[in-house]
Image (tube, helix red, strand yellow):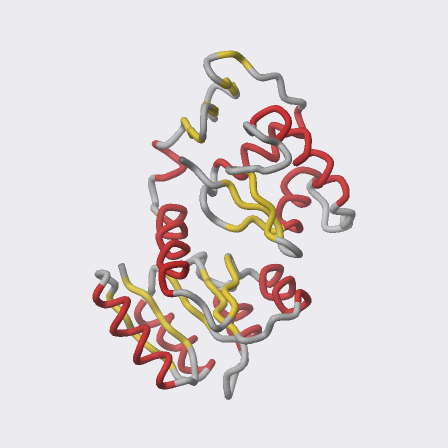
Length: 226
């Protein structure tokens, strides 16, 4: 799998290149935003690791440029910790956000999750999604828990279906609002909290301590399989 690292910190790039290559990734690197866009167009990477604070073009400009022609997953790796930066990056088209400093194992896990999401056949062949004692049959629009049918409202189903089609990946609040209500004008995430609470009551072993339907604070939700 080809991976593009766009970061102007040469020591970090060197360390990531060594680590990721050892885990089987074909790594290419760009030291500024303009070079990142050029390399992405030339090499067509499978996943992109992108810093926000870069010369020539900053990370946000790179995301906008890339999203004009590619759906390759983008993980923002940034020292910026403010929720506004995270939300702006995710709304612009990034798929995940990792704050520096980070654990390499966490980054590798997120890369694996996005690789599964990016697999061309994932949505065609994986019509059944399992987590805990829950089975979601996307083709049959059917949910069972421990073998017993679970009744979901249409809105609960659309929310769960979207998460199931992107297992392991961060799904932003804006993405879910657009998917469920089909409008950029719907911005009240209180709706999402309500429906997520209902889903957890129906599908989690301990709704107050969810293992699979997780909240990413200030950003969105993530479905963890297993």
